[in-house]
Length: 221
Length: 221
Image (cartoon, rainbow over the protein chains, first blue to last red):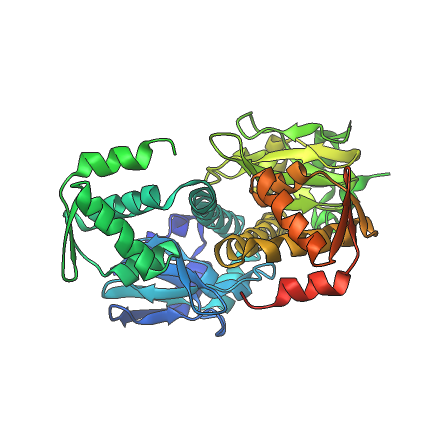
């Protein structure tokens, strides 16, 4: 199967452009936790998710992490190919959150078509704007939301992604998503336990009061 | 004078496209502190700064502000024309920080050319990527930098923009740039005074030890 048809813009490319992209795309499999792209490394290529789940995050000078966005089936990561746009002057790291299959598209080939194809250039604009929207949401969260609300929102989102209220996730991993130290996560989770919102056991968090978490997330301050 | 030539892409547009943009651009003057674009309002248009200085910021539900980026002569604001790209799903507010002259370009005209012109579409990508880079810098700042370093960096940046170490700025305005309450700004400035870094008088902050502020900004944690 040609997974490049996952690109909404595929049918608007002419046959020779389609052919160029087809020859420039390599299917790759990544194990859970494998690094797909490392900020400081070269331009890896555009990553089109065929199946699985990937996480894009930024890392502080001293190694702390915060999740910028996650990508699922049919989503594409541009910033792993930052050389396609000169003004992208920041680094992100991309890892597989689950076993993932992806097409990696050569940045040179993509750029050569983007330079002549308005549909591909405008598609790229739309993708960047979607990620911008997610990052603006993140700014809103870290600037104005208290940590209890952010943690409640994170747990509800995880439950929605996984389709279950029993989450296999460590406190440290949650801290890396939210940009917070593990101890802060643990302390807040213990408070959630005392409020009857979750139950904890080793490596597991069970959401026991989804409505309670949801109203906590939504209350003002 | 045709200020549209400030667009680096101008010469790559064909004469009819140039003509469309010329007819779609209106020169406007804004007084200091005037609002050019309000997040919740309709698509104002692209704002190309001819002279002056503008500030783009985001506002929390309860009215707190944080500066996203500033634009100077020859810079262009895309997000005041968010309707040109469907996936821009966030609001910003744009005000004049100084008396400002700007061209306001109709979003419909710009979009109609962007849809057929690879140079304009790719230029738009570059502009968005520049803003993305500034917002990623902001995330790095608010997540990992302590407030003393951020304030030191802000004062040095102001001095560089204004070309003087005597800054006419209130503590509240600084708070709105940095997303912090006025009292927090005042407290830290008083600490800076005690360290001999600045002097305060009504409505004025004088940087007395630029090197000291600079090393404070750069020290780890």
